[in-house]
Image (cartoon, rainbow, N blue to C red; front, side):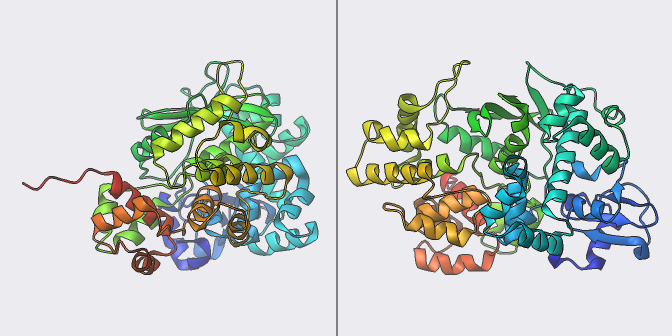
Length: 486
């Protein structure tokens, strides 16, 4: 349930029950103490007259509140609201989390969204209670807290890694938001968190349940040799970040999901974190999604078998489009072979032996030398890469989904399946359905749903706004061996 859909009483009951399912979905500000908390804060439940609810920590801070020292609300998982919302506010939040303001400023963010800086400021203040700079500041504070508590990085490195422009700005913000100095905040660290192997190790907060075996299996089946490595409990890859190449590994350890990272520039850490979270769909609300889908008798067994299913995202929009186009109408294994060949021939080799997925300009110039198959498909892939390279086509998590779909469909060789699949993976839209997908139709037949695309599309409408997760369940059903009849 989204913040906008919840009444005051429903939110108050959540904080009275200290319900951790709502952590990150809204902020509770308490006038009598001047602090803001996550819903599960162990402090005594405040009186209703003293409570105000906010959509973001930034809004609470702008209203004069400070973060609670007991529950550290900034450590909660991100809100699923930003994937559900396709308006300017939701799109802006996805781009802010990716570090666009640090790289391009408020004018760059506004330009990406199609507004003037002043218009965007008014929209965000009206919708979220804080303007773009305040929202970016809150995100920097959250990243800095993670690094202070979770790594041995010197405070100066933490400051610049989190996106602060000066040590003074960093110190002032930490004191202002947390009522602690950076050293006092670091003193709250857990002894088991540390830097590893010259890189960074952090805990990835998320809501449970989470289908990690399914996520790792998905990644392993599609791993491009040289770029990605995956097994039953981990996934690692190289990726191009705004200031240079990076490497990350997401793995489960002692019941905790962790991120190991190595970066050319520490300033790329917020972007890497945002992309890792999108890739593993860590800001989803699994209890709400599972509950909504399980109300349908046909889906209840699927939800029971796989609680907390996630929809994998993407770390790079251009790469995702190329992968989707190469994967059209071929098996997962065949697509993986073709992508591995493309990367081996055109990818940039890194000193540690890894390879970066080829950039769009290189695919546009030389893709025809490596790609195999129908000439029309090769022209389509090379043409899409050229459009991305020269800016004719832009793709990002902050795109308007309707405009993004129209732009993709306007390109030769891209049909509805590819446009919708790319939208699902890049923007994290939770309500995409792929009726023409062969695996989804096979899974539907196994679940007792209509296998005909038109009838299946009509049936799927009852699961909105969670049709992406319906699709994920149908994919899982199609890949699960059928039980033998005794």
